[in-house]
Length: 325
View 1 (tube, rainbow, N blue to C red):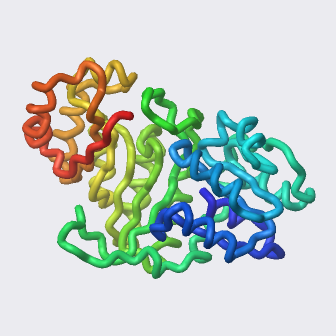
View 2: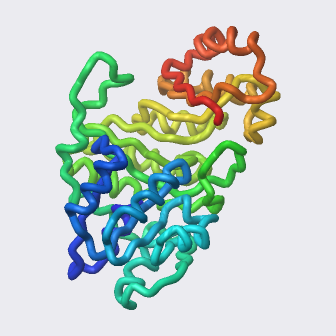
């Protein structure tokens, strides 16, 4: 998201991006790094579980102008202003932020709505030091994807309303199949050995997914490990298209194998759909990385005892567990 905005900023501005999370910086180290950079304008992209860290950065850094965007800004823009933000950017900022710069950086809240994604330049990935993202092989890796795995967004938002989720953009906005393939080619040109489509819900639009897969399958020069993050998929034609295009893994929020818990979470799927999804992925050779939530209401000791065997029976080879908070 940040690099997408960077690609829209005029060249006359000097830009530096600090990816504190990927660098493994703690809060104090992040603040020190910001102070060393000494920016005229400090921009923060924030998710809600880092809201406290955001307030510390706003209070303890000396930049004259401090601005905030990202998912946390969607419903907290007024609060953010009282916490020290000079300006707050709600929703997409690829258009509103460059205009704000040209207008002299006024105070306020700026609503960007949903930008037409095909009109944007590719994210400014080349501004980053790719050496920071190189993977050193070790035996604990879940899967071997070479030495450089780069993410891509083919869409923004998710129309579903699962109660635990922090994805606040409910308008599903997506790139065209040709545009996604062009971005694949650009990332490969950077030396990537793997691409992960890090969407909130990659496979919502059936026709878009199948269209993308058909183009990719007919592009013999594109030979790369790739995966996607999406939702439980029961349409065989979609899974078949993904397999033909070389999709290796689907990262999917399954969350529970109990229908009562799924209903409580307001998930759109039930166990029968998860079972069908697993059967299709096994049939077409796609590995499932399944996210599960532990600690939900209605969860019984018997369910937890049986869960490992149920996951194994479905052949979900990469289960990933989160604790409900």
